[in-house]
Image (tube, rainbow, N blue to C red; front, side, top):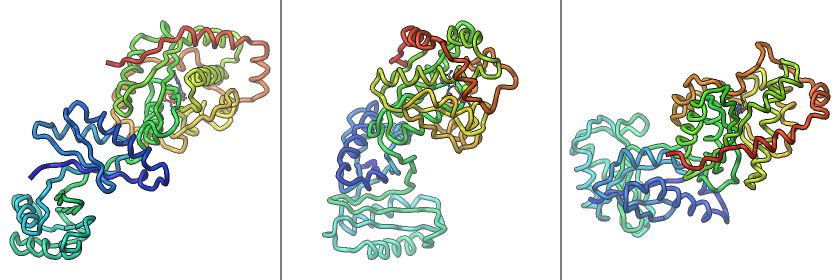
Length: 386
Ligand code: ATP
Ligand code: MG
Protein backbone atom coordinates (compact mmCIF):
# COMPACT_ATOMS: atom_id res chain seq x y z
CA UNK A 1 0.00 0.00 0.00
CA UNK A 2 1.20 3.47 -0.79
CA UNK A 3 1.22 6.08 1.92
CA UNK A 4 -0.17 9.60 1.77
CA UNK A 5 -0.43 12.63 3.98
CA UNK A 6 -4.02 13.85 4.05
CA UNK A 7 -4.56 17.41 5.17
CA UNK A 8 -7.88 18.93 6.17
CA UNK A 9 -8.46 22.63 6.46
CA UNK A 10 -11.28 24.27 8.34
CA UNK A 11 -11.93 27.97 8.32
CA UNK A 12 -10.79 28.45 4.71
CA UNK A 13 -13.55 26.11 3.69
CA UNK A 14 -16.06 28.74 4.72
CA UNK A 15 -14.61 31.42 2.45
CA UNK A 16 -16.93 32.28 -0.42
CA UNK A 17 -15.58 33.64 -3.70
CA UNK A 18 -12.11 34.04 -2.17
CA UNK A 19 -11.66 30.40 -1.30
CA UNK A 20 -9.27 29.62 -4.12
CA UNK A 21 -6.92 32.40 -3.03
CA UNK A 22 -6.74 30.92 0.49
CA UNK A 23 -6.36 27.35 -0.78
CA UNK A 24 -3.57 28.31 -3.19
CA UNK A 25 -1.69 30.11 -0.43
CA UNK A 26 -2.12 27.16 1.92
CA UNK A 27 -0.76 24.77 -0.70
CA UNK A 28 2.17 27.08 -1.39
CA UNK A 29 2.96 27.30 2.35
CA UNK A 30 2.73 23.52 2.75
CA UNK A 31 5.16 23.01 -0.14
CA UNK A 32 7.59 25.48 1.38
CA UNK A 33 7.32 23.89 4.82
CA UNK A 34 8.00 20.40 3.47
CA UNK A 35 10.61 21.53 0.94
CA UNK A 36 13.57 19.91 2.68
CA UNK A 37 11.96 16.45 2.45
CA UNK A 38 12.48 16.63 -1.32
CA UNK A 39 10.13 15.81 -4.23
CA UNK A 40 6.92 17.00 -2.59
CA UNK A 41 3.89 16.74 -4.89
CA UNK A 42 0.65 18.22 -3.67
CA UNK A 43 -2.79 17.25 -4.99
CA UNK A 44 -5.98 19.00 -4.13
CA UNK A 45 -8.75 16.43 -4.02
CA UNK A 46 -12.34 17.17 -3.00
CA UNK A 47 -11.51 19.60 -0.20
CA UNK A 48 -8.52 17.64 1.03
CA UNK A 49 -4.84 18.23 0.34
CA UNK A 50 -3.20 14.94 -0.50
CA UNK A 51 0.56 14.37 -0.63
CA UNK A 52 2.14 11.06 -1.69
CA UNK A 53 4.81 10.03 0.83
CA UNK A 54 8.23 8.99 -0.46
CA UNK A 55 9.85 6.08 1.29
CA UNK A 56 12.94 8.01 2.35
CA UNK A 57 11.00 10.79 4.09
CA UNK A 58 11.44 11.42 7.80
CA UNK A 59 7.81 11.49 8.95
CA UNK A 60 8.66 13.03 12.32
CA UNK A 61 10.16 15.98 10.47
CA UNK A 62 7.12 16.20 8.19
CA UNK A 63 4.90 16.23 11.27
CA UNK A 64 6.94 18.93 12.98
CA UNK A 65 6.80 21.12 9.87
CA UNK A 66 3.09 20.68 9.19
CA UNK A 67 2.23 21.56 12.79
CA UNK A 68 3.63 25.01 12.00
CA UNK A 69 1.54 25.68 8.90
CA UNK A 70 -1.42 27.87 9.76
CA UNK A 71 -4.67 27.08 7.99
CA UNK A 72 -4.41 23.32 8.58
CA UNK A 73 -7.07 21.90 10.92
CA UNK A 74 -5.60 18.40 11.09
CA UNK A 75 -3.57 15.93 9.09
CA UNK A 76 -2.89 12.24 9.12
CA UNK A 77 -0.43 9.74 7.65
CA UNK A 78 -2.71 7.40 5.71
CA UNK A 79 -2.47 4.16 3.75
CA UNK A 80 -4.16 3.86 0.39
CA UNK A 81 -5.94 0.61 -0.35
CA UNK A 82 -7.17 -0.54 -3.70
CA UNK A 83 -10.76 0.62 -3.88
CA UNK A 84 -12.75 -2.60 -3.64
CA UNK A 85 -14.35 -4.07 -0.55
CA UNK A 86 -12.18 -7.20 -0.36
CA UNK A 87 -8.91 -5.23 -0.56
CA UNK A 88 -10.09 -2.66 1.99
CA UNK A 89 -11.07 -5.41 4.40
CA UNK A 90 -7.75 -7.24 4.02
CA UNK A 91 -5.69 -4.10 4.30
CA UNK A 92 -7.57 -2.84 7.33
CA UNK A 93 -7.08 -6.20 9.00
CA UNK A 94 -3.34 -6.18 8.25
CA UNK A 95 -2.95 -2.66 9.60
CA UNK A 96 -4.70 -3.24 12.92
CA UNK A 97 -4.08 -6.88 13.72
CA UNK A 98 -0.95 -6.11 15.75
CA UNK A 99 -2.18 -2.90 17.33
CA UNK A 100 -2.94 -2.88 21.04
CA UNK A 101 -6.56 -1.88 21.68
CA UNK A 102 -9.69 -3.21 23.30
CA UNK A 103 -12.32 -0.87 21.93
CA UNK A 104 -12.51 0.83 18.56
CA UNK A 105 -14.55 3.15 16.44
CA UNK A 106 -14.71 3.12 12.68
CA UNK A 107 -15.91 6.09 10.68
CA UNK A 108 -16.20 6.13 6.94
CA UNK A 109 -16.62 9.06 4.60
CA UNK A 110 -17.69 8.14 1.10
CA UNK A 111 -17.11 10.98 -1.27
CA UNK A 112 -17.10 8.72 -4.33
CA UNK A 113 -20.79 7.89 -4.60
CA UNK A 114 -20.08 5.23 -7.27
CA UNK A 115 -18.60 2.95 -4.64
CA UNK A 116 -21.08 0.11 -4.15
CA UNK A 117 -21.44 0.28 -0.36
CA UNK A 118 -22.66 3.32 1.56
CA UNK A 119 -20.59 4.68 4.44
CA UNK A 120 -22.85 3.19 7.14
CA UNK A 121 -22.71 -0.17 5.37
CA UNK A 122 -18.94 -0.03 5.28
CA UNK A 123 -18.84 0.87 8.98
CA UNK A 124 -21.16 -2.04 9.74
CA UNK A 125 -19.39 -4.70 7.65
CA UNK A 126 -15.82 -3.72 8.45
CA UNK A 127 -16.68 -3.25 12.11
CA UNK A 128 -18.23 -6.72 12.21
CA UNK A 129 -15.03 -8.13 10.68
CA UNK A 130 -12.88 -6.54 13.41
CA UNK A 131 -15.22 -7.76 16.17
CA UNK A 132 -15.28 -11.26 14.80
CA UNK A 133 -11.68 -11.80 13.74
CA UNK A 134 -9.87 -9.81 16.44
CA UNK A 135 -12.42 -10.10 19.25
CA UNK A 136 -12.53 -6.33 19.84
CA UNK A 137 -15.47 -4.21 20.95
CA UNK A 138 -17.07 -1.26 19.21
CA UNK A 139 -17.36 1.82 21.43
CA UNK A 140 -18.26 5.04 19.69
CA UNK A 141 -17.43 7.31 22.61
CA UNK A 142 -14.66 5.65 24.65
CA UNK A 143 -12.50 4.03 21.99
CA UNK A 144 -8.81 3.09 22.16
CA UNK A 145 -8.48 3.04 18.39
CA UNK A 146 -10.11 5.56 16.10
CA UNK A 147 -10.05 4.36 12.53
CA UNK A 148 -11.10 6.43 9.53
CA UNK A 149 -11.85 5.23 6.05
CA UNK A 150 -12.04 7.85 3.32
CA UNK A 151 -13.42 6.75 -0.05
CA UNK A 152 -12.58 9.62 -2.35
CA UNK A 153 -12.14 9.55 -6.14
CA UNK A 154 -10.06 6.41 -6.87
CA UNK A 155 -8.60 6.22 -3.35
CA UNK A 156 -9.55 4.31 -0.24
CA UNK A 157 -7.55 5.90 2.53
CA UNK A 158 -7.25 4.09 5.83
CA UNK A 159 -5.97 6.16 8.70
CA UNK A 160 -5.68 6.41 12.48
CA UNK A 161 -4.77 9.16 14.93
CA UNK A 162 -5.44 12.45 13.19
CA UNK A 163 -3.01 15.10 14.31
CA UNK A 164 -4.71 18.35 15.33
CA UNK A 165 -3.08 21.60 14.25
CA UNK A 166 -3.73 25.18 15.30
CA UNK A 167 -6.05 26.11 12.42
CA UNK A 168 -6.13 29.78 11.54
CA UNK A 169 -5.43 31.24 8.11
CA UNK A 170 -2.40 30.70 5.86
CA UNK A 171 0.36 33.23 6.45
CA UNK A 172 0.23 35.78 3.63
CA UNK A 173 -3.57 35.90 3.29
CA UNK A 174 -4.11 38.79 5.72
CA UNK A 175 -2.33 42.13 5.62
CA UNK A 176 1.24 42.44 6.88
CA UNK A 177 1.85 43.84 10.38
CA UNK A 178 4.75 45.36 12.30
CA UNK A 179 5.33 43.68 15.66
CA UNK A 180 7.20 45.52 18.37
CA UNK A 181 9.35 42.65 19.55
CA UNK A 182 11.14 42.86 22.88
CA UNK A 183 13.15 39.95 24.21
CA UNK A 184 10.36 39.12 26.67
CA UNK A 185 7.87 36.28 26.78
CA UNK A 186 4.84 38.15 25.49
CA UNK A 187 5.65 39.87 22.22
CA UNK A 188 6.87 36.73 20.35
CA UNK A 189 3.57 35.08 21.31
CA UNK A 190 1.67 38.14 20.06
CA UNK A 191 3.53 37.95 16.73
CA UNK A 192 2.75 34.27 16.41
CA UNK A 193 -0.94 34.82 17.13
CA UNK A 194 -1.14 37.31 14.29
CA UNK A 195 0.73 34.90 12.01
CA UNK A 196 -2.03 32.46 12.94
CA UNK A 197 -4.55 34.94 11.55
CA UNK A 198 -2.68 35.03 8.24
CA UNK A 199 -0.38 38.06 8.69
CA UNK A 200 3.25 38.22 7.72
CA UNK A 201 5.21 40.03 10.40
CA UNK A 202 7.98 42.60 10.17
CA UNK A 203 9.74 43.05 13.50
CA UNK A 204 10.95 46.17 15.27
CA UNK A 205 13.16 45.94 18.33
CA UNK A 206 14.40 48.88 20.39
CA UNK A 207 17.87 48.34 21.68
CA UNK A 208 19.98 50.28 24.15
CA UNK A 209 23.42 48.92 23.31
CA UNK A 210 25.98 49.53 24.86
CA UNK A 211 23.98 50.03 28.06
CA UNK A 212 22.36 46.67 27.41
CA UNK A 213 24.53 43.73 26.30
CA UNK A 214 25.13 42.62 22.71
CA UNK A 215 23.52 39.30 23.69
CA UNK A 216 20.12 40.92 23.90
CA UNK A 217 20.35 41.66 20.15
CA UNK A 218 21.30 38.04 19.48
CA UNK A 219 18.36 36.92 21.58
CA UNK A 220 15.94 38.95 19.47
CA UNK A 221 17.45 37.57 16.25
CA UNK A 222 17.07 34.05 17.64
CA UNK A 223 13.43 34.75 18.46
CA UNK A 224 12.76 35.94 14.90
CA UNK A 225 14.49 32.83 13.59
CA UNK A 226 12.05 30.65 15.54
CA UNK A 227 9.08 32.73 14.38
CA UNK A 228 10.30 32.41 10.79
CA UNK A 229 9.37 28.74 10.95
CA UNK A 230 5.82 30.04 10.56
CA UNK A 231 6.53 32.42 7.67
CA UNK A 232 9.14 31.99 4.96
CA UNK A 233 11.15 35.13 5.53
CA UNK A 234 10.99 38.38 7.45
CA UNK A 235 12.72 41.61 8.25
CA UNK A 236 13.92 42.76 11.67
CA UNK A 237 14.70 46.40 12.43
CA UNK A 238 16.98 46.90 15.42
CA UNK A 239 16.50 50.55 16.35
CA UNK A 240 19.15 52.28 18.51
CA UNK A 241 17.20 53.64 21.47
CA UNK A 242 19.76 54.78 24.03
CA UNK A 243 20.09 58.37 22.78
CA UNK A 244 16.33 58.77 22.88
CA UNK A 245 16.22 57.43 26.43
CA UNK A 246 18.90 59.88 27.48
CA UNK A 247 16.87 62.76 26.05
CA UNK A 248 13.79 61.48 27.87
CA UNK A 249 15.76 61.50 31.13
CA UNK A 250 16.23 65.23 30.62
CA UNK A 251 12.59 66.13 30.08
CA UNK A 252 10.35 63.58 31.80
CA UNK A 253 9.53 63.05 35.48
CA UNK A 254 11.07 59.72 36.55
CA UNK A 255 7.71 57.99 37.06
CA UNK A 256 6.71 58.90 33.48
CA UNK A 257 9.84 57.64 31.75
CA UNK A 258 8.40 54.34 30.57
CA UNK A 259 5.38 56.15 29.11
CA UNK A 260 7.71 58.41 27.13
CA UNK A 261 9.83 55.45 26.00
CA UNK A 262 6.69 53.74 24.78
CA UNK A 263 5.39 56.82 22.97
CA UNK A 264 8.67 57.01 21.06
CA UNK A 265 8.55 53.27 20.34
CA UNK A 266 5.04 53.55 18.92
CA UNK A 267 5.93 56.58 16.79
CA UNK A 268 9.00 54.89 15.36
CA UNK A 269 7.23 51.59 14.77
CA UNK A 270 4.48 53.42 12.88
CA UNK A 271 7.03 55.29 10.73
CA UNK A 272 8.74 52.00 9.88
CA UNK A 273 5.36 50.47 9.07
CA UNK A 274 4.59 53.35 6.71
CA UNK A 275 7.98 52.92 5.02
CA UNK A 276 7.16 49.22 4.54
CA UNK A 277 3.58 49.90 3.36
CA UNK A 278 2.20 48.13 6.42
CA UNK A 279 -1.06 49.26 7.97
CA UNK A 280 -1.02 47.99 11.54
CA UNK A 281 1.10 47.42 14.65
CA UNK A 282 1.19 44.51 17.09
CA UNK A 283 2.32 44.52 20.71
CA UNK A 284 2.43 41.94 23.49
CA UNK A 285 0.50 44.08 25.95
CA UNK A 286 -1.90 42.40 28.37
CA UNK A 287 -4.23 44.57 30.41
CA UNK A 288 -2.94 45.32 33.88
CA UNK A 289 0.06 42.98 33.63
CA UNK A 290 2.50 45.75 34.56
CA UNK A 291 2.15 49.44 35.34
CA UNK A 292 2.61 50.50 31.72
CA UNK A 293 -0.32 48.35 30.68
CA UNK A 294 -3.20 49.97 32.54
CA UNK A 295 -5.93 51.35 30.29
CA UNK A 296 -4.89 54.92 31.23
CA UNK A 297 -1.29 54.25 30.24
CA UNK A 298 -2.20 52.37 27.09
CA UNK A 299 -4.33 55.41 26.15
CA UNK A 300 -1.41 57.73 26.81
CA UNK A 301 0.83 55.70 24.55
CA UNK A 302 -1.70 54.87 21.87
CA UNK A 303 -2.58 58.51 21.21
CA UNK A 304 0.68 59.15 19.32
CA UNK A 305 -0.25 56.86 16.40
CA UNK A 306 -3.16 56.68 14.01
CA UNK A 307 -2.54 53.10 12.79
CA UNK A 308 -4.50 50.30 14.44
CA UNK A 309 -2.53 48.69 17.27
CA UNK A 310 -3.43 45.01 17.61
CA UNK A 311 -2.93 43.47 21.05
CA UNK A 312 -3.77 39.79 20.74
CA UNK A 313 -2.78 39.08 24.36
CA UNK A 314 -4.82 41.85 25.93
CA UNK A 315 -7.20 39.51 27.77
CA UNK A 316 -4.77 36.72 28.51
CA UNK A 317 -3.10 35.77 31.79
CA UNK A 318 0.64 35.32 32.00
CA UNK A 319 0.33 31.57 32.48
CA UNK A 320 -1.85 31.28 29.37
CA UNK A 321 0.72 33.25 27.39
CA UNK A 322 3.52 31.11 28.80
CA UNK A 323 1.83 27.91 27.63
CA UNK A 324 1.83 29.22 24.06
CA UNK A 325 5.42 30.50 24.36
CA UNK A 326 6.49 26.97 25.33
CA UNK A 327 4.45 25.42 22.56
CA UNK A 328 5.97 27.67 19.87
CA UNK A 329 9.47 27.26 21.35
CA UNK A 330 10.19 30.91 22.11
CA UNK A 331 9.95 30.52 25.89
CA UNK A 332 13.45 29.17 26.52
CA UNK A 333 14.95 32.03 24.52
CA UNK A 334 12.75 34.65 26.17
CA UNK A 335 13.77 33.74 29.70
CA UNK A 336 17.48 34.28 29.04
CA UNK A 337 18.32 37.01 31.53
CA UNK A 338 19.55 39.92 29.39
CA UNK A 339 18.45 43.43 30.18
CA UNK A 340 16.04 45.11 27.84
CA UNK A 341 15.98 48.87 27.21
CA UNK A 342 12.84 49.27 29.31
CA UNK A 343 14.67 48.24 32.46
CA UNK A 344 17.07 51.18 32.11
CA UNK A 345 16.63 54.29 34.20
CA UNK A 346 13.18 53.38 35.48
CA UNK A 347 12.02 54.03 39.06
CA UNK A 348 10.47 51.35 41.28
CA UNK A 349 7.07 52.98 41.18
CA UNK A 350 6.10 54.15 37.71
CA UNK A 351 2.88 56.06 37.22
CA UNK A 352 -0.16 53.83 36.65
CA UNK A 353 -2.64 56.54 35.60
CA UNK A 354 -0.78 58.81 33.25
CA UNK A 355 -2.10 62.34 32.96
CA UNK A 356 -2.43 63.28 29.29
CA UNK A 357 -2.12 67.02 29.93
CA UNK A 358 1.07 66.54 31.88
CA UNK A 359 2.47 64.49 29.01
CA UNK A 360 1.59 67.03 26.36
CA UNK A 361 3.07 69.86 28.46
CA UNK A 362 6.29 67.88 28.91
CA UNK A 363 6.60 67.13 25.21
CA UNK A 364 5.75 70.67 24.19
CA UNK A 365 8.63 72.08 22.14
CA UNK A 366 10.58 68.81 22.33
CA UNK A 367 12.02 67.93 18.93
CA UNK A 368 11.22 64.25 19.08
CA UNK A 369 10.93 64.00 15.30
CA UNK A 370 14.60 64.67 14.88
CA UNK A 371 15.44 61.95 17.39
CA UNK A 372 12.99 59.58 15.80
CA UNK A 373 14.35 60.09 12.28
CA UNK A 374 17.93 59.67 13.47
CA UNK A 375 17.04 56.41 15.20
CA UNK A 376 15.31 55.06 12.11
CA UNK A 377 18.29 56.02 9.94
CA UNK A 378 20.65 54.29 12.36
CA UNK A 379 18.63 51.05 12.44
CA UNK A 380 20.15 47.73 11.49
CA UNK A 381 17.91 45.89 9.07
CA UNK A 382 18.33 42.14 9.30
CA UNK A 383 16.87 39.70 6.81
CA UNK A 384 19.04 36.63 7.32
CA UNK A 385 18.71 34.56 10.50
CA UNK A 386 20.92 31.54 9.93
P1 ATP B 1 7.29 41.36 26.58
O1 ATP B 1 7.31 40.09 27.33
O2 ATP B 1 6.77 41.22 25.20
O3 ATP B 1 8.59 42.10 26.68
P2 ATP B 1 6.29 42.75 28.80
O4 ATP B 1 5.29 42.05 29.58
O5 ATP B 1 7.68 42.78 29.28
O6 ATP B 1 6.21 42.25 27.30
P3 ATP B 1 6.37 45.57 28.48
O7 ATP B 1 7.81 45.59 28.77
O8 ATP B 1 5.45 46.49 29.21
O9 ATP B 1 5.70 44.18 28.64
O10 ATP B 1 6.16 45.81 26.95
C1 ATP B 1 4.89 45.85 26.36
C2 ATP B 1 5.06 45.68 24.88
O11 ATP B 1 5.80 46.77 24.33
C3 ATP B 1 5.85 44.45 24.50
O12 ATP B 1 5.05 43.30 24.46
C4 ATP B 1 6.37 44.82 23.13
O13 ATP B 1 5.38 44.66 22.15
C5 ATP B 1 6.65 46.30 23.31
N1 ATP B 1 8.07 46.48 23.73
C6 ATP B 1 8.54 46.65 24.95
N2 ATP B 1 9.89 46.77 24.94
C7 ATP B 1 10.27 46.67 23.66
C8 ATP B 1 11.52 46.70 22.96
N3 ATP B 1 12.67 46.85 23.61
N4 ATP B 1 11.52 46.56 21.64
C9 ATP B 1 10.35 46.40 20.96
N5 ATP B 1 9.16 46.36 21.55
C10 ATP B 1 9.09 46.49 22.88
MG1 MG C 1 9.32 43.51 28.12
